[in-house]
Length: 384
Image (cartoon, rainbow, N blue to C red; front, side, top):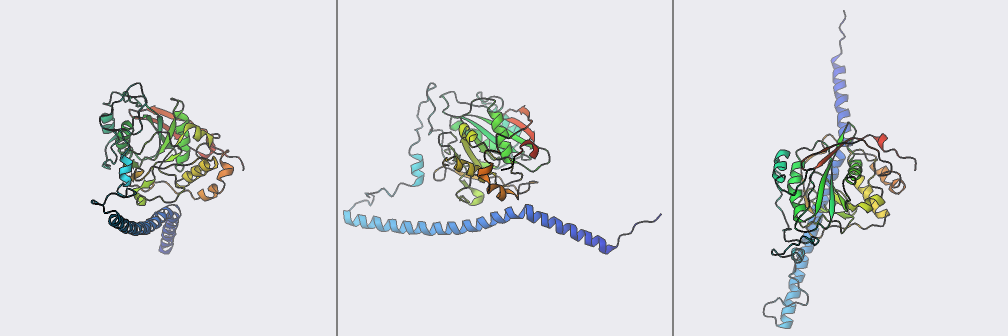
């Protein structure tokens, strides 16, 4: 019996080729996203420096104007200006909210600027189990199974379905619910949570999961709008109103990982919303984006093609913190640029109209779970 002997040189050569190919795949699928984030951080630093210089210049100019006006008008306290320069953006954000002694009426619609909406919230990123969160909020007598809640002291102005795409993020979901449930309750909205979980081995398809969640949510009730919410985006201000009156809306306009700056004007990621009719009109999200990246840009294009105008929260209301993660096990979608070049041609062909799926549905204490095994064959696209 002869034993096959492999020369040491061949072993080392195979190990070298394996490490080289692994590095090559890493730089193709992972490194571009990291590099893009780093480059944006550098750009953001420059923007922040420029804005600081502009702010300093504005403050100096303001002091000159005030001093000149005081001398001209012999003002005693230096505050009688033709334009009130003391009104800060923060003040304007708080001026129109109802007082603490406001009386709710069960037969009238809930106002949109309530005294329960205090503004900035303390974000707690500490991990907590889902059991603890369920125990905490199940004590609320108005919280129904599946996470459906509505106020009883006034008629909810809007019915909002919160759709959350999901895979392998079990430690993030309780953190989001810990912050998002009180926010929606403070805003007196009727809401329910839908966790759309992707099974199988194909790359994560965030957009297709949203389409599935939308179709399933409409089977439960007549929602006014849907909010597409990443599980790792935690709102920092409960005055960031999740109602449906200014749709389409990009809620997460200022994310901490981008130094609270908008990466680019067409950025539509993180947390966004449309009315049910708007989402149907644009044929939903595209289904062809396998892997992370690009689907939000395509959604922005669809909204623009439909002549709709995206709104964003004013000032610091749109601030969010991002739970740290690194797209674990998920690859970047390298074909997104080719698809984005043909957004208009694909809009009517790829979306809600060509979607097929076979869900496994369970109703949990705080949400409805919709598990689907997604494959490209479930959303075929004809030539365009």
